[in-house]
Amino acid sequence: EDQVTQSPEALRLQEGESSSLNCSYTVSGLRGLFWYRQDPGKGPEFLFTLYSAGEEKEKERLKATLTKKESFLHITAPKPEDSATYLCAVPVLILTGGGNKLTFGTGTQLKVEL
Amino acid sequence: EPEVTQTPSHQVTQMGQEVILRCVPISNHLYFYWYRQILGQKVEFLVSFYNNEISEKSEIFDDQFSVERPDGSNFTLKIRSTKLEDSAMYFCASSRGLGYQETQYFGPGTRLLVL
Image (cartoon, rainbow over all chains, first blue to last red):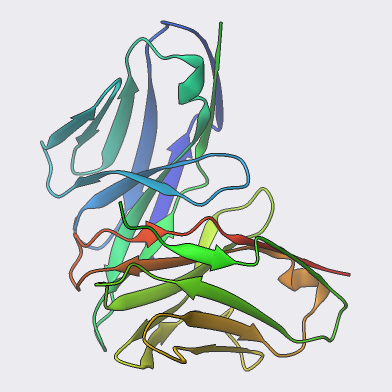
């Protein structure tokens, strides 16, 4: 069964203090990975899809990287508005009918303070 | 930008009552999903729906749950006889196509509280 583990569970940063969040996974064959942002009481908001090991994607202060065993979400010079829970998820293809179902990690709760 | 919408945002119900949660997926998407998140826990897959039928469901999705696409725009989740443990955030999601790399876009969720 696919397992997704995120660390740390919680992270407190000062504004401008860069750091990285980790997502490690055990899956039967790497087939991509998704990063989402979730604000309290809201639905997951799509950030990135990474398709293959070595791939990197960037959006503003966020950069996601992928290896064969884990993914990192690097946050450079964070601002208070980056405070949220960051979720990673791996897809499992649905053989009958298509689409895929996502297996999520428990997330990293990021708090960025002034 | 197109987005997934859900109603109601909050629902309080008594144990044993039926609830229907509603979703309007993104208009050109073909695959629809329900997930739930119990407070403080992971987002969990419940069911996927394509071409007017369930394509996969999890162990959580027992006989008390059903899904329907009653018209060309709405996608509903019905819980026939709610239990206390059904209290959670329920998220609808949709994707354009099949394949591992197809992004699922999530709605804002319905917070269900069963008393």
